[in-house]
Image 1 (cartoon, rainbow, N blue to C red):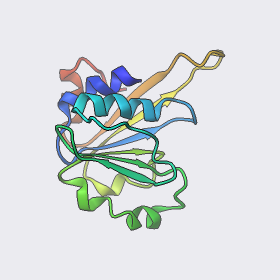
Image 2: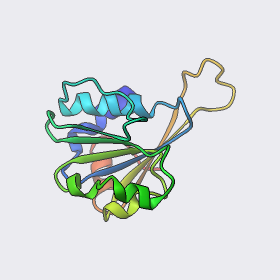
Image 3: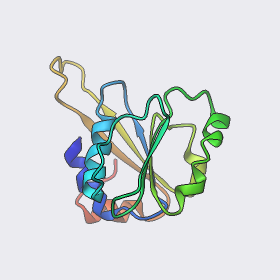
Image 4: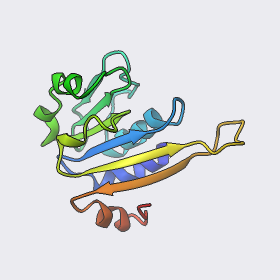
Length: 147
């Protein structure tokens, strides 16, 4: 997951919204750690579960990392005022499906799953779902095919 995040970082642009979906322990925060490393963020990236959002301003682009797991709906997302930083930052929202799509005209949804029968929990299936803008072209430039 870390390697996939790092691989995506070079094509990120200000205003990008990435939505991460997957069960607990799927690797969402590990993905963000790789993305942050690829952006040059020097600070440690940890899950924002209890603080809801963390801003990492020291990379090539500012990174806003949000955990929407405990949010009850769109109104609580609005209270975070994420759209204030969206135009200048890359915003990544764990558990954001159905809550944050309205923040941007386009987004990349990354669905992470663990196949049944993987008792060790080492295998992940990752689906990239671009919505709008030029996400499909950017993913193709990395050799990543949206599914």
